[in-house]
Length: 359
Image 1: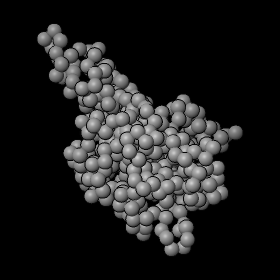
Image 2: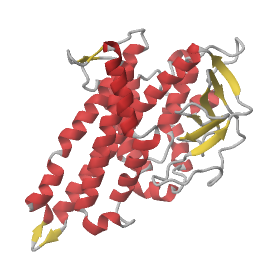
Image 3: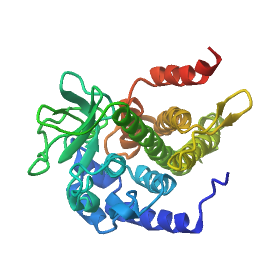
Image 4: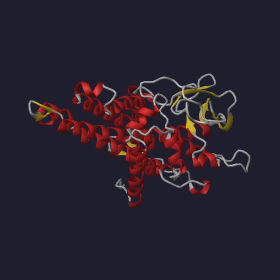
């Protein structure tokens, strides 16, 4: 297993790092509040082919692997890009893996591939015919959800809902909304539908973990830059040992989360070939995609929340003021960490996966 970036992935990283640096960033994130969607940046993103890059080439997409998408997600997270790229990419991949509905019409249409039709993923099963707290529900034209044992898709909406249309106010200014599934179209039913949705949610976990890694990485940069510039008693505050201690152990924590996110993406790519993977923690042999996706989300959530907290802390009172960027990372890191579920419950779910074979 080699988790180093390939030459192609290095190119992908450089291209999208430049794109997100130029077209997104903290200033654009502020402008996109409270719904957390920058329509102009999304239109520019369409020119890169990113919305459909994770769909297989046979279905008209770019054929990028989950590992490739993780590289993009890290760079998006570093600039807290207000774009539903992870949700759209995962939902598009889910749709591409389903059989054609009528034998001729493709499940993934050209609008979804191009990104002109934004598709979201309900990461929790529907409740009483409603997809609850969909991550991109306030901006998606269509949403894929699991309703009982039925995989369904709502819409299509004529246009993206305007700001505030069903949007759920939230601390992280994410485009959250509930979506009504009463008129949804059934895509698949039975165990296959449940398994397809579970796979998509694991991909969402993996790419969200990568996003959080990018946030944590940039939060550390902001903290280090600030303590090097800010002076007290005629010296940079970064020269004080108590401040150094707050930041010194963050690189190892972030690198560990990065490693887990990369390994989860690697395992996800292997799983598409029918490889089940191993889950043997006693032998330190874990290649099971679902387990690694959960580990990555938990570890990246912890790294991002701690990195943003400590970086905000070393900013002193300025960290809490809106004109400083660190508060944007602080709020979004926590919002993403809790979006799927309480991390404690995710830990218990992972523990159940590990212990179940021994029961």
